[in-house]
Image (cartoon, rainbow, N blue to C red):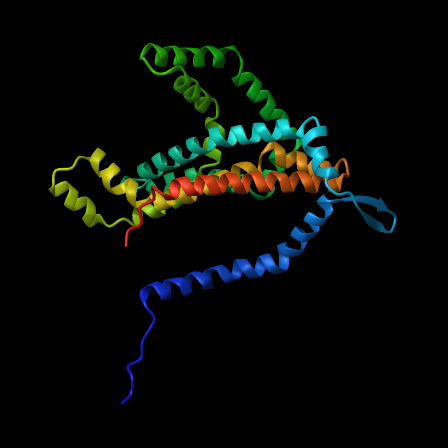
Length: 301
């Protein structure tokens, strides 16, 4: 008597599919990033001296880390500013992305064009345009425009907004945060393209029968959003928060300082130690954020 063949369960199939999806990343990491990662760790505990024939590595112990944390006059301050900007920007980016995605998911004429417009900053921030933007000419234009927008007119406009909110009874700290959000609107929109795309894909995957059932039960659009839409896309909120944190910190002043320390000051050991300190802080912060948000994430089976 032959025993019946036992096939894989749905959970096992999903697990193996996940392994197949991660294999390309693992191969790329193994062949492209693993060796530079190990060399960077070795350089952080060493002093590199350039010569005509190449460079030589001399052990330095923890000297580079002590230099970065206690002797360098800019690193700790720049690191603190980067983390503070990230804490301010990430909630604004995620909230704006969700708001824009809900609007773009509605049925209206020109929806495809509107989605393309919101995704344009991602295209403009890459390739040749990004290199032009990082040039002296574009930096001068942006600097002048920023100075003009932060002049008297902008100041009075923000003061009027703050006065209106304060007179409405809004807390002072909330008003300060909202005024800061207005000042960062260009940066928020520029950094929200990928997040909007992810949210739109998540919204389209929600079954319409859920909304039909809620409408039959008499639920309002507000209740449908908080009882159906928000829980169903909560896994994507976690994804976008983590992506926004990494994306924000990769383009931070700390990253530029690490790059300048290596390729302008030619202090490769100090630069490597700065990078590893930054990496450890980001990893700990991401672990805490993921742990806190994942407790509220709803997974629909």
